[in-house]
Image 1 (cartoon, chains in turn red, yellow, green):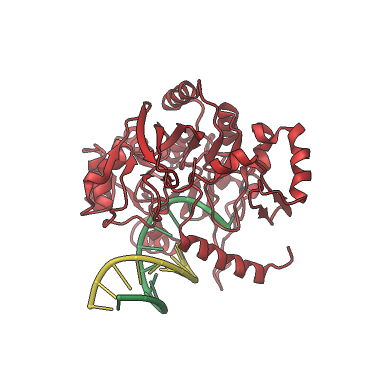
Image 2 (image 1 turned 30 degrees about the vertical axis):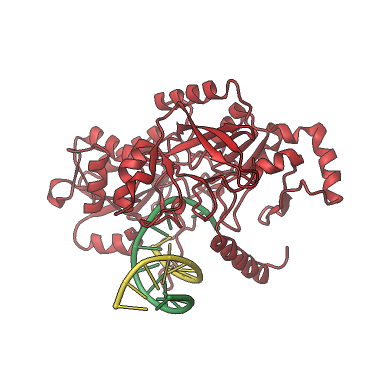
Length: 437
DNA sequence: GCGATCAGAT
DNA sequence: CACATCTGATCGC
């Protein structure tokens, strides 16, 4: 399939159909209320939330895809003018409300773009998703998997969300006299808040725009904007800081909980050496974290093993809407793609999924790998540009046959000119600062 | 002055 | 480091 037919979460000129996996800002940059380029395909829940984020958007351009069934669209080859039939299926991505993966098939082959996704093994919802995917893949081998590689490193381990949610509840119940604030984004982590509300039989405070979102999602009696009704408040994550907590504690005893798969980084403040540990990597988070309170802070009561209290007022709980490393591995084993490409493209921390999972993919069977590496040295045009993981001091790269290359260029990979330029600029900076590599 | 874009911070 | 998002500065009209 040629370039310029389809874009997933990319909004540059030149495609005939655009696909939106979910409504987080990093997947909609470039998309505006004045959009007229072409139809946008998304899930029903995303379509419902869409006008709230993009007021005055011309809604006739939105196309809802129901989950789990094939939809056909007919595109036109820009070069030959001939019709190209494309089928697409949206599959629950278990990320935030409305988030889906897109599975495409056509004469070009079969492509799967996960968007952002979480692939938990045991929840009922996850089992359903697994069945849907297996059924869809029954007759199709995935040529290229575009993968949410956010946590594509074995050091990223965290429990299922159900477990993490209970940890949050346990923290709250162990602070019966405290106000609680929880840092969240504009979308996502609703299940966590529902779990808290159910377990403790309380309402949860949210800020007014967030309440509107909750209402659009169909939650009507659980959330409130009246501070007096509850001691648990979900606040915007960007407003959540040590200073915020220090300030709140001058009024009432308050603790903060930050739910994230990432270890939370605290930078020491000048002249304040009371307590601060930098959790620079989850590698450390499993071993030692201690404040003046010592180990009792580390494990509060029984099941709170991965909960970190890294400040007297702040707890970090590993509640993540992205897949951990082992879940990514499970997913790749299930899909068995010929090739994998990461969709998280932030400059310096990109990990090529093939670095860890190449051996699970058709194109990198050991027997072929050596052959391809030899070819690479000769500079064949089937080479995908290499990415470096300088932290590991290793270079990872992918090799595909020419036939595959055309598919690679198709989906989810063409970036806007701006982002290319920006990345190039950052690349220059990096090169200046860390030229040792 | 306004919207779009970018750097920087949380 | 990054998650996803905000603020404030700058750019182009």
